[in-house]
Image (cartoon, rainbow, N blue to C red):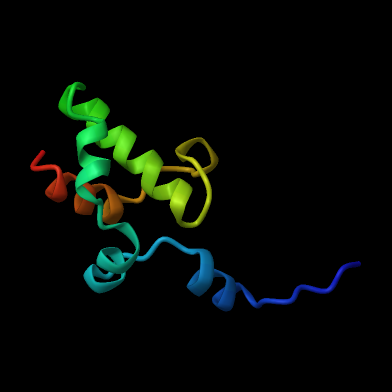
Length: 83
C-alpha cells in the first residue's frame, strides 16, 4: 500500500474549492480578457465557460469530474459576469 503524503484535511485545503469570499476572490477572479472571451455567448454558456476556466486553473479539474457544480464558485462567477 502506498503512503499518503497529505491528510484529507490538508488535501482539501490545498486542492479544494473554497466557499469563503476572500478565498474565492484570490483564486477565481476573472480578468477582463477572461470575461471578453465569452461575450458572444448567452448567459448560461458564459457562466459554464467561466466555471470550466476557473476549475481548470484551480484545482486543475473540469465539471465532469465533480458530483455537482460548487454553488459558491458559480455564484461568485455569476456576480462577476453580471448574470
